[in-house]
Amino acid sequence: MSVPLTTRAPLLEVRDVTAFYGDLQALFGITLDVYAGEIVALIGSNGAGKSTLLRVVSGLKPAAGGSLRFEGNDVSRIPAHEMVERGVSHVPEGRQVFPYLTVRENLSLGAYARRARPHAKELMEEQLRFFPRLGERLDQLAGTLSGGEQQMVAIARGLMAKPKLLLLDEPSLGLAPKIVEEVFAKIQEIKNTGITMLIVEQNVVSALGIADRGYVVQNGKILMADSAPALLANDLVRAAYLGI
Image (tube, rainbow, N blue to C red; front, top):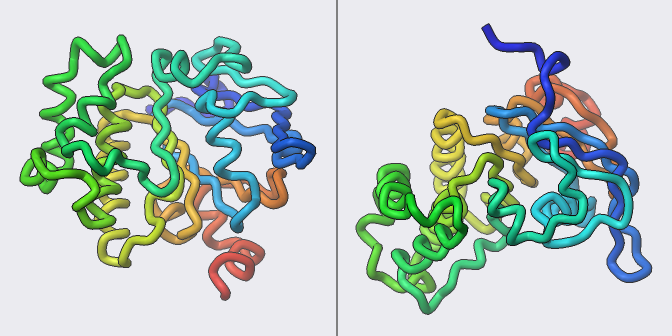
């Protein structure tokens, strides 16, 4: 029997987090939880602060205020490379593969962390089972792949770090609808292995279709939080993001 979310500690706790770009404030007191084994979706319009929040969680951007805890430990001032060692892997918006390296080399770089390095061979085999198409492209330069294949490389590279928490930033960006379906089916498969995910996504139907819970982010603040089905049925969400 699953334990109710209210009676167990979150894997990730974000409390009253603020962030700035110069004098421009991007996050205003963000508070959220992510529990082990679930997918949590962050939805909202462009510029709402969703990607900034992922960067704060992964240590790429220090929070100006508030706190973050991961597995019960304060990680508010932990840099990105140390967050990777603790089990947080960030797949950035726009894929950002290394175009002049092969697929094999891109994936191998994902296992650079100390916690992943001894398991690099089995991690590679695991990713090729998840993404068999990449097995056919191992010695091909990543920059010559299609957008969908590059997204698979980016996700597989993130998984090569052996994460406990995988941060996905706009995995459907720039992809054809059929490829979006394929990518989200793979994300569901990843969840079934027990990896926890926090996903930023503008494709609200796809994101909430696989998520357990979601947060609506607007102007750097949490506007709404609920189960994924409840958000999909919410009139405000449907009007603002689905045009219904």
